[in-house]
Amino acid sequence: MSSPPPVSRNGARTKMAGWALLLILLAGFPLAITNPTYTSIGVFTVLFMAATVAWNMFSGFSGYISLGHAAFYGIGAYTLALLANHLGMAGGYGIFVLVPVAGIAAALVAVPFGMITLRTRRRTFIVITIAVFWLFQLTAYNLSFTGGAAGLQLPTPTWSGSFYNVPFYFAALLVFAIAITLAWMVRRSRFGLQLLAIRDDEDRASALGVKVWPIKMTALVLSALVTGMTGALWAYFVGQAFPQFAFDPLFAISVTLMAFFGGIGTLAGPVIGALVLESVQQYLDLQFSNGSIYLVVFGVLFLVVLLFMPKGIVPALGKWLPTWRERRLDRADVSPDPPARERTAVR
Image (cartoon, rainbow, N blue to C red; front, side, top):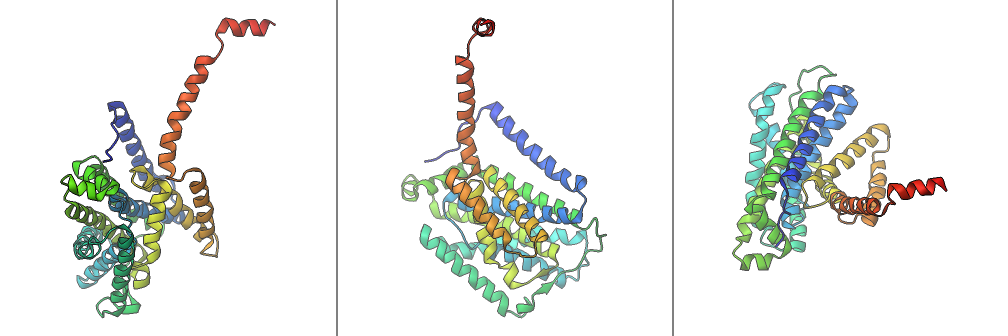
């Protein structure tokens, strides 16, 4: 059974300092970069960082690759839109209060979702999650209260153009902080060890007393909670919720690729994968009229990672850095002593 590697106090402090530094840098981004174009990229990037961490919290830790997480994303988007319109709320900070409610709605939907999908094993599970996701999208198309193909419009905040993105950015950053905190707590807990045992050998874990189905269900619900919150923020940010965009199959594929790119099953891997890929995608979409050019860039990046870092960036760096340090120490040990160097210089 896999377990988190032992971490020294200094190592733990270094990691905590690294996460704190990352949050400080992210918090300072909209203060240092005020261009609305770049802060808009920042909003989408932080949202996908949170969504990828949430996806990894279930799929990366359990080994069950879900391609149906867009269902939770869409549920969060539509829950926020329906509540805001039903309550007659005006655009502004008040709607952010509904974001956790949207996350809870997605978590509740994850229960029947899991009751259907988690009865199956890994390859079948992938197919079933896709099928269930399409049911959600078709339902959104055909229900009257969801607006059908016309979708739903959300209230528009009256913030100024240069400031408009900032509240959304910090709301997304808060959701990301919640996501990474939950993932860290799961990874370092007994619950996380049980998830890793399921990932390594589900039958053996069950024989050793792990309650496999409840563990998987709990992880799925936690993952859906955060994913629903990201969907709600996305809908409020873009101002609308259409079935083809709220329940978008490309969302599930994107978070999966981002997690694999950075290092699936790690804490930092999904963050790095989303930070790199989503920011590149958004930048290329804004700079070029061809909205699919980012797919070419993604293809090149993935070829490089598959060839040189098949397990992702973070696991590759975890192996490369100790080796690099050992080589430096070995070179220092075999270097000539000062007198020998002086004799060589005299000659």
